[in-house]
Image (cartoon, rainbow, N blue to C red; front, side, top):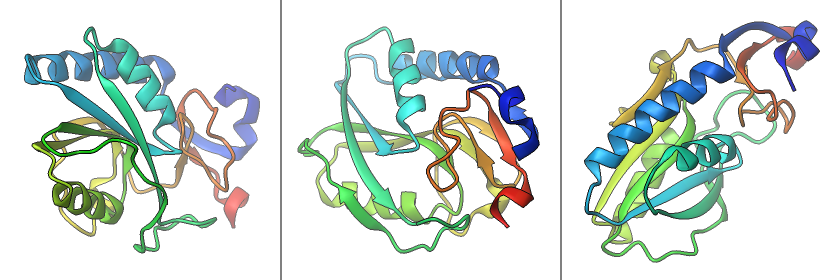
Length: 183
């Protein structure tokens, strides 16, 4: 789905599909250099990170293991509740693994902060974060994100895996959702 198809539901396009793919290529090159000679486990946070994980992992020119975790702190709203619920746990033992959490967006940072503590308690050798998007002004906790695609404003955004009430994930760009859609 393209932004033009639902223009009446969007305020503005922040990042285009082409910009996303270019940035993921740059980030993949950095990750390859940083993890040369190390086994790398990519962990995607469902459901939002599906698009980022798929496209990012295909840009890597190395073998990686991929696992998924589903957590929620949103429900059907537009603001994080800060209470993390595990909906699907990992299938992989993290002991001694070099973990790269692949995220669609860092908003408040509360969910990621929880994930970092949780993964550290499971014995990961290292844990880093790759986020396509980050909202610096929305941060409630400081998150050290090694690989960031784009810093964006605090507007509610959809597309490229990001949703509002499970809609708009298949939008190819990242766009600001028009307030009339969720008010």
